[in-house]
Length: 227
Length: 389
Image (tube, rainbow over all chains, first blue to last red; front, side, top):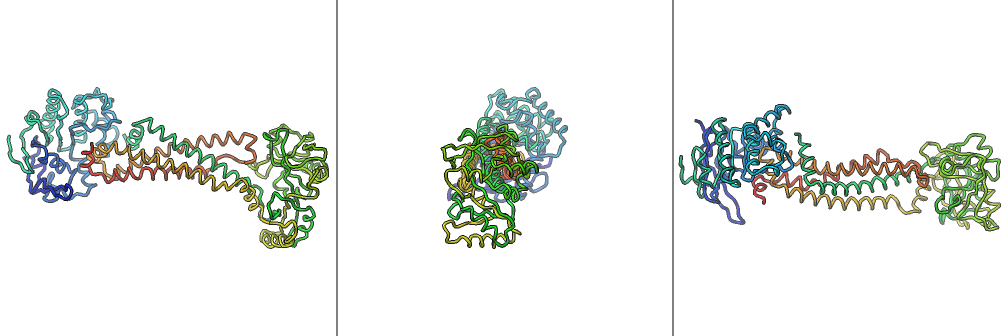
């Protein structure tokens, strides 16, 4: 396997008042195509910051981030937005669906950034909803859906434009065990059957078991790697 | 789904809030539509028939003060003057002093018809009958329609100024003709009768007139003729002020106050209030959606596209309120113009210019009220937006 995304010597600092805090100071990481990686670590270890850097929603102060052979850390904001729309699907802990839109409209959002004709868009939305087994809830608004169903809609939204990379930030943090396992099973299925590369930040060791491997992040460095 | 669908759905996420905001904007544009159209109509009415080569001579103190009738012949002899007539405000009403007041002038029929032939349209028969009949009166079509008057009918016209020696305020007048204006939209809610009839029967104001209308050989001579007339009567007990008809009409309007100024102040106050209400509401509405904006940007919506959508919401809101306000004010104006009381204004319909100005104001309002939330959405970093609780 070759690396889909690679971080070379990445540094990232935050300012808190007059004090500068180093989150990463020379972080290096490579995630292979088709991998399913769980990232664990205590609060403040930089898990979410790492996810932001991998997803191009935040910028590193130094080093390089390479996606599919191309450096993305120097992209302009507009180019980075295009890249996210094309290459990355995001799944959040609290689903982050648009409350004014139905499930199918939420799923359609990323397709508004493409030039697909309406009919093709509709087909893609139906396919995505079918994959997450929510075709019968297409016309429902988020408040009419359970937490697990909302997260399924969020997964459908993440995969509808067929990105190579799925970034999941505590995707089961707001769900009960059974629902969480269902969601994780769906992610595993997306990884195994559709070849999606998945990077999942989690506090939950049970969730991490669904991944192919787990990286332990502490104080900005990978302290331990377990298979 | 298109961007517009998203804009529309976001705007109506809290329908009550959107309805209340739309109603506030609607009220501002209703006020704008009505007041501006009334002001335009009044200005137009004051200029109706104003000819470039006609001057009005009135008392220098105020046009409500009289001039001696002897001035008419002296003015006629001024170099550059090709015609002269005079008129006197009668304060006319029919039966009910409060409900049925209208414009009424005592005039010298022959000279008045000669000078205003183009503005007061009568048949030759009617014109001749009016000149010949001492108690004759010509009434505008709007008045005739309002009161159901016919040619040949004798009607009692009262004055809130003049009184007959026996105390009566009413003069019997025989309708010699019904006139129309130069244009269908010109006001015809007025009447004209013989000055001689009034002069001989009034208990006061004998041989006094309201003002003198002067026709000059050319508009280029207006200034010199006006100066010559005013100089001729300088230092007399009745000094004159001579201006062109348009200026006189505007001065007449200003008796009721500076309407342009009043309309501007009222409309500006309404819009200032709306601006504050709508912009603060939109800012707080956008703050509620910070996380959603962060999510949209995360999905790949560019910052300029998010800015356009937020501005689009403000524009849609202001345009909805404006279109409703302007449409309702247009309907109200149409309904008002059918009322006899409003016939003095002439054409009361909303002009395309007023509608266009309203729409431009709506766009400006939308851009201003949407500017702060749109720019903050543009600048918002994804990380900060997603971390907002």
